[in-house]
Length: 272
Length: 244
Image 1 (cartoon, chains in turn green, brown):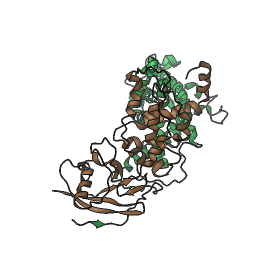
Image 2: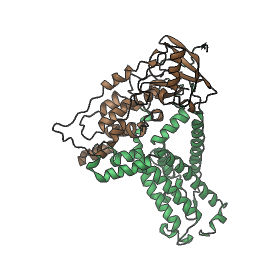
Image 3: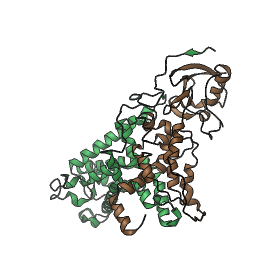
Image 4: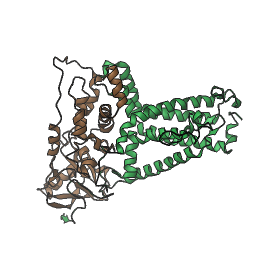
């Protein structure tokens, strides 16, 4: 069998710039990249638009983008602003974006998807001025734990909203009955369960709850917390996608209901 | 016997090319077997670094069809036999000859990490749950595939500013050790350059020992750096409570 000499290889032999998308990988590495671009793109745009549109309420159901409810009072909605000029009504969106934007999983997802940094493993890049997370604006990633604190507060409100969906009187909405086992109640329940799973698996939470200790056995309660957070953390990506999808689906359900498209769905067990 | 076409990089630091070799495939063969067959029947001067052929010594790292992999752990029946199989040296390190690269960069980085330092008069009893984390990192076989796939080294050649995932897990195994008292956080930030890691997890994807490099080592270290440098409220709380 004769040797066949080919043209010189196409990749540089030493570390350095290879060029955007240059790779010898033969597997469909781009499929994950494309899926992330499409998924994050669609859900991200939806979240922005939904948060700006208003009308995130239908009967006893409150869209997660508009929780807590008191932020939506006419006196506050798009009138009162934070010092940074952010309308108070958009605080939930800022918290959601801040928490997810600095999340260790989403960082991987969007650095790959939107910055091609890299688009896939062992796939070439275009950038030459890479500094990672050592400079602004990426130093903001170090604030992830602060967004986690805010998101945890938001999660408490979302659980309260879910209780209100089942028992409208708790939230001062007794006009919708005392008990409401409507489809929307269960849509909201699944939403907070998924958001809780995502939040409890947060890397920062896992660190703060016990991971920062060197002697794990010295504080058994923190060790137990770390073990529990680690279980959620092992599937953080799955929780992240499921909760992102369902938070948008929950908003869409409540929005369509508010527009009058879904009333018949709620008739079997809802407040109608 | 079926034959598979291999395109193997032949060359040195001055340049090289892919050379085609046909290899007769038998059941259970791995890529390293194919390289042996080429060495024995066609190219006795083909340079390969290998040792155990059991995925435990970390010597035979290469890029197979563009993916950083161990040659001894990549079975031919996992590859498409209708297409040529490319085998190239790791790109993050300078080439010596053919598939052999100069990985001495790694040993230089290792020397900069302060070694294990116990308290004077340490009681050497440890509970398993205290060393579980460090033991995961001890599985590392130093194949340097994580270093090779890391784009900070591979594409941006930040070898002077960034130590790479292998050395971050070593630093993590020491930092998380229950009996170690050395403070490595400043050097993890400054010398190992942990901020350059943008956690795209390629190191975890290629690790043949399936160590959760990013989730269990790099991110916890990033959080410890945040504790020290970027969390003013946490710092205040620690000052007032006296906690770590």
